[in-house]
Length: 440
Ligand code: GDP
Picture 1 (cartoon, rainbow, N blue to C red):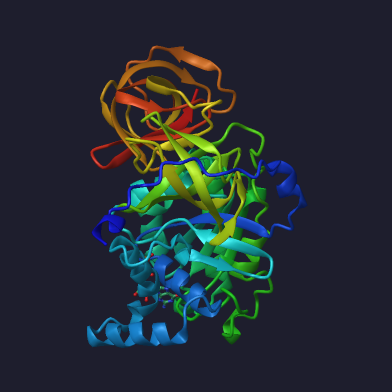
Picture 2: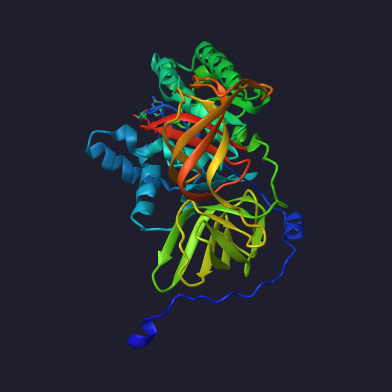
């Protein structure tokens, strides 16, 4: 009857198998898993490329794509149907139709990939920051079309690359896209590659960590299959997917204290709470107790899902969904950090940042972004200008910090948030990114 339906949230602590997670991980034949964030100027073809990739890998059906094409034709925008493959998934998620974060995942023979961001999202930069803070590498999409590359460079291409680097992403795969619009010109490809490679190395990416792939996302040329266009016969390098598979995984911080920042929270009232995110450091298993910061409440792990599959444990670098039992009155929001109560992350309202200035910095109000977390704050002081290469102090207490310089700045927040050395933080003001850097 009615009473049974009024089920209360389960607050119990589930049993633990007491596994040695690190040795379980070493034993497992874990397929490589990598997550990446897709960046690039608006209209560069990011969504189209991801839609086409999901189609060519069989993640979405031809039927779905045909339906989207018909809908797109009805409103005279037939070229957009591939971009809608991703949009559709994002909207479904926004409406709560599905809580499967797996929708932007695909698998090849060698690896499992998670697309960390829905490109083309309205609130793009904050999303990109969140994505980049969890990404193993970035996919930078460039429109090779006449004039488009040049306007992209003046536009978001540079800002996005700078943000990637500032968020600690060290590898970029550059997809030089829409080569069909320039007759697969090798000259054009080389010209763009040279310019972008010069710019990326100046931004701090090492040449060995940058790869270039010529593609046509719309036609699916050189994404999964070699280009079918005869004009592309000069190219004998890897396809985009092969290049994605080439990216060496970042060293995993398995033995560090557990840190997982919450990407999304899914609540079914009266039943359960699930959180998705990526383990930044450490490991966990079913039955573990977690501390939720900054709230300070406790949660117990009821279930673990790694890459969409049920699991007993998870380690740093993996994207997970955790089913949680919450102790009473636990406050939890996207951006919060789950950690081990024995080795908790501390909450602070003042911190020092070694920041690369994108704009003039002075004592001013700023929005502080760390992963999915946003907090209001203020630049309280600029204590030093640092040498870009050596980090040595070149000037104390500057009055202003000029764009392109690295400085040590002190930030004061309106409230205490979980912060620790080594985290990457972005400062924004009036909708613009003004600085990015590393917490000291
Ligand atoms: P986004 O803003 O970067 O996500 O770009 P979209 O994926 O929405 O693409 C912008 C426009 O470029 C759309 O009209 C696409 O059909 C078109 N487009 C994307 N990729 C290609 C391509 O490889 N070749 C051609 N000719 N057009 C493309």
